[in-house]
Each structure stands twice: as C-alpha cells, then as structure tokens.
Length: 338
Length: 169
Image (cartoon, rainbow over all chains, first blue to last red; front, side, top):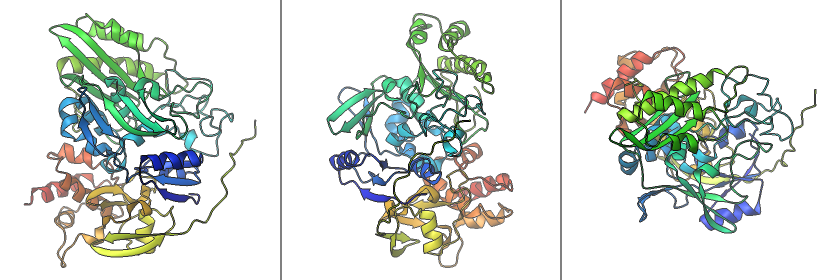
C-alpha cells in the first residue's frame, strides 16, 4: 500500500469541500473494497477522507411513503432492520446473499454502490485493463472470462458489477441522493451505474466531488411475491455467476406488475423495461416467464468461457419468477430450493 | 505487443503519524500510527498482540477477525486511525480471570481445529455471531460463519462447538 494522507470530514459540506479540493483523494467509509484495492496498488489516492463520523446512519420512513437509507448504514444493519425485513424483504435477502458477515458489518450502503468490479485483470496491475489504465486494452476479452459480462459489453470492457444489494435496489426502483459542490440532486438507480462503452474507467454517473448521502426506496416494496436467487460456485461467500431479483404484483392469477433485475451479467444491474412491461396482464406461469427471459437475454453475447451464463441466466430468471409467484423466496441460509 | 503503460503514481508523502486512543481488551492504549496502518498490523506489530492472525490480508479468509465495538470485522481491511476511540476485543481478551470464554472451551471440547491458524478468527467470529443472535440452526451457523475459512477442514467440529456455546445460558 502506498503512503497517503488522512483527513476526517466534520460534516457533509466539509467532505464535499475536501473532495472538490483534491481530485486525487478518495472517500472512505467501510473500506472493505477501497483498502483492498489500495493494497493491490489499483487505487493510489493521495489522501483518504474518512466520512464515517457523518450523520448518515438512519433508516427512516419518509412522508411520500418510501424509506430513506442513510449512506453510512452498514449492510448488516440494513439487512436486519425491521422496516427493511418487513417492507423490502427482497433487499434484505440480496444483502445477506453477498460477502461475509464481517464484511457486511463494515461495508456501508453508499460504499456498496461504489464498489468496483472484481475482474481479476482489473486487480492485476501487471496486465492491461482499460478500467484501471484507460487505453491499455482489455485482457479479459481474450483471457479468462468465465465470471464476465454477457450483456451491455463493449470492446473496451466486459467486467461485471459485483454487488448483490444493488440488484435488488435496481429492481425496487430506488434512487440515490447525492450532494456535490453544486448542491444536491437525486439520481434514478437505473441511471447511477454506467455501461462500459469506451469509458470503462467511469463506473457511475456521479460528478466529481459528489457524495452519496442516502438511498431512497419507493413505497412499493413487493413484500409478498419476491425472491433473490443467486447462482454461484460456492453456496456462500462467492460472487454471482448469475443472480436474479424478481418481484411480482399479482391480482389473482394475473400479473399487474413485474420487476426483474439481473446481477453478475453486466457492468451494472440489468433491467429491461420491455420484458417487464410485456408480463403485465399475463398469467404467472413458465410460458410467460420463459418469454420474459428470452426478451431480457435477446442481446446476450458470450465469450470463450462464459457463454454458459446465457442458458444459466434464462433458467435462473424462470426459476426466480416462479419462486416470486409462489411466494417461496430463496433462503439465504440453507439455500434449499422450494 | 503494446508496451504496458503505468499510470503516474502520486508523489510519496510522509504524513505525520496520527495520535489515536484504542481500548484493546479493556485496556486504554494511546498510540500514534501512520494512516495506512491496518488495525491488524497495529495489533500485531505495534501492540504485540499476535493472537490475531494475518492470513490472506485481503478480507477473504477471516483469520484476522476481531470485535470492534462488539461487531466482528476483518482487521486487515480496517484502517486503525479510523477507529479512534473504539473498543477492540481480540482472542487475548476473551478469557476472564483465567477462565476460558465459553466459545474457547467449546472449541477445545469439540476439537474444532487442527493447525489452529484460523482459530482465533473463528472464535472471535463465533463470539460476534452469538452476540448478533441471528443464527439458530446449523445451516444458519454455517452461512453466517462463511467468512472464516479453515483449510484443515474442521468445519463440522466448528459448527458443533458453536452450537454448544450457543446453547449455554
């Protein structure tokens, strides 16, 4: 790890001021990803700005009917928060599907959004990587790419976003509250993370100097018909090959609304409004779900080692929607399929 | 093949050490540390508490698990200066008045280790797990202990030891 300076932000304005004053500085909260990347020499900040003393630790219902999650709420506290367990169990489940309890105790809500890909070439400074070193090339396209993306890739980058929590937040239609030198704004979750295009070094649409202060959930939590299904190489503590956050609003035997977000397959949590819209008015059965999966994956493209993900994703989507329809969500402890 | 370009590194600075206070195993410690010192290195190299182990040093193995303000965390990914004022419990702080912590006693009773390198982390993690109160079944213990790797494969006995310790009043 390189040497760096350390500063502690006294309040939000102070944090923003310090970020704006030093573009080579990095904000630190849980540190679970940033410290690791610093040890690997991938991140080399001149200074880290500790924001952990800022008052962003509340989970509270807001007058519009939703819930506001402070950016510093630890992942474990959020997963076990009574409001989240009761109103947004898909989010609780997705959080518990990721990392280990030690890491969830450390990792913050905002940091989860800001974590970087676990592409092994991004981590290996001896290899070219456009995300780490723009213009150097992508080692994964013709390298070992079993874990990599099948949707929304570019010539420059086929990395995936590693978060489970963000897949549920995407499905729920959350928004991200940020504060920057120009004031505050709200970013729709679908617009927060980016596809790689020719600028894979930019993971998000945060402007320089902007700080996440909260994640806001809309009123509709899909607390009855939902699941978070994660397919991985180990039963626990492994990144997703494919994951699916699926939620349905059912009226009798008719789908009123469907939400499907995929993890492990793209540079951001993957949603397809057309596939969701076309489920409206249909019966919740394997036929409808299969057609939705085909729509979601219509532009999927596999590489040398990950083409299996296309079939895996299709089956996972159908299974997840079936679990949601039956109100038998995936258990994150015994992992048995019900 | 195109020669690899390496981004320019920022100049190496030598920031002043930062004075902090830690309460380690109920003992007040005043120490000045460089910002890049992890809690793990602070415990082992500065406070000579070598019970906490360095395994992967990347948050993947759990050997460095300690309790910070009662919560289990990976000490290797924690910058010590960010924990100014915190209470840290390591494996050295679990026994009281010469009596082993129930988790320690259960690990011995159930032979929950072979080489022992992961054991301090396993034990601190299990103490954290019991404090959280979320694990009721063996499946839930396995899931919530998945951040602690045991390459000897003592998992069945680790789960049995934790079940035994959990059953105690």
